Amino acid sequence: MCYILHMDTKELPETLIEAIRYFSDPDVCLKYAISLRWPNGVITCPQCGSDQVMFLANARLFKCRGNHSRQKFSVKVGTLMEDSPIGLDKWFAAMWMIANDKNGISSYEIARELGITQKSAWFLAHRIRLAMQTGTFQKLSGQVESDETYIGGKARNMHKWRKAREIKGRGTAGKAIVMGILERHGSKDTVSRVRAKVIHSTATPTIEKEIRAAVEPNSELFTDELSSYAGLDKEYTHNVINHMETYVKGNVHTNGIENFWSLLKRTIRGTYVSVEPFHLIRYVDEQSFRFNNRKDDNLARFNQVASSVSGKRITYKHLTGKDGLSSEPSA
Ligand SMILES: [Zn+2]
Image: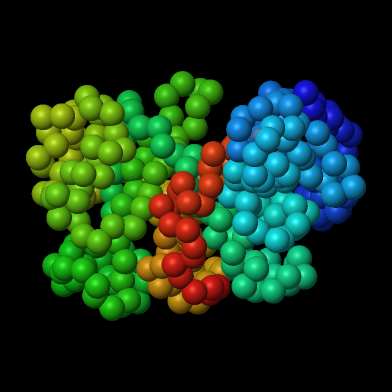
């Protein structure tokens, strides 16, 4: 059996500069990637599952003793990095940037910082963001707030209720709808967490589908008067906020999700000039990740992203059902 070497615990990085320096050593990168890919320390062949594996030190590859094709494999096989020629050092640095940059980072900035092409940077960022999305599969429960906001173009400065009247159907130029569902924190040890996504309409079928997918039945639900929520009254304890009233009645409010909207909008305004719906999805995912992990330090947030990217069985194909990229590289 081939056992991994233990990570050095000295001088773990805390800042981006330290992270880039730390991962500039190929052996450190390899050890770290191995610890994520095979957390129990036993390296197994991705083809046959055997632990009869040799390490080819010069090539930094493994070789299975089994009699089959593709005996040699790298630590990237079976992960989101599998088909990428970009080195682990650059992958880890890009993960650090995306996990920790509060204002969002473009592929141009990643390219500049790492000395790679913008196309390569876009590829890395795209995969890393996919990995970040997978961290929020667990359903929300307890006290849950739900709300929608409109972002971009003409809708930017319009009041929500005017937008709902004036912007109907899908594909209206320059606006997008984001639905956010926030679980309030329970005990002192937990933090509130959010699931947010771009939706095409606020009609009843969409709203009901999203709530059922994200929230445990019998949870307490807090929303505004949008009628699309009315049909959920039987499955949830539904509290409706009346925005016409000027004060908050006890715990009947959506202040938690409104706080998230202001963070999201600050990111979009501060860093990006125009927001196409395609880009908006990733800002929403990134902001959700950082919000849900806001009590962690940089290293902990990085570790979470890195283990999602480098962990086994999360391949690009697996996540998307596609073999290749469907979109052209952009910022
Ligand atoms: Zn094998």
